[in-house]
Length: 332
Image 1 (cartoon, rainbow, N blue to C red):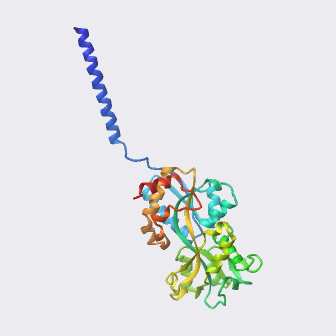
Image 2: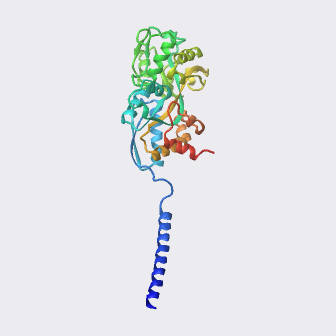
């Protein structure tokens, strides 16, 4: 009899232990945070020249990410532009950046170091090519720049890439037929005010504050870029296929345009990372990019054009898995 009671007691003890283990598991599950662990650590974001749209967008995105991903610290690094941004990303000097699609495609076409590691996060807004001259300038087309002092952007910028191509499409050899001045949007307006530049190229979102501010200090205008230039660019093939005809609205620079629209060339910008980036981090950053559109757009107008419906199209780059995860989660 005592032995039988002992076996019964042992069975009941085992049953009670099993129930307690189940309850303990449920309690742990209940108390654990829902969803994936929030990313943490440090990232470097390569932006652009001071006073350019890349830099202003980067600063405001940094603030939004600070609220959404409080355990991630972010350092912003100024750069010459798209070409330098991609080189930094591929070398590991930066973790995220913004670059124009034509610069990305050229980086791939040239098979530069690390090109195969690049991944898209989101298509952002379009850059518009802006050829700025003093209001009284005789320049009416790009071909009229022959013999003049022309700001063509810094060597590592997307501006330099597109300026050289626009000049070539207009029948000019960049290093022979003009006097090229290597300068960024942070210095070109001042050089024009000092009469050290006859014209300058800029490729950026609308409006670019440096151009806006210049128009308030100096009478300027924008040189139209007609569709024949786009056709000539497309004839080159390769990465030039990312250029499209576009129009700068008449109210982009009211003083420089007198309310008149100006024909130009546009190219999309892409938020870029590498295949090695943590998927949870990329998913979180993608979410913030979309969610912060209106807040950032109130201060940087081009950001208003970030759109969930088009953000997924990061050609020529494949989507990073973290970005893909986010877009799937919000798919209707």
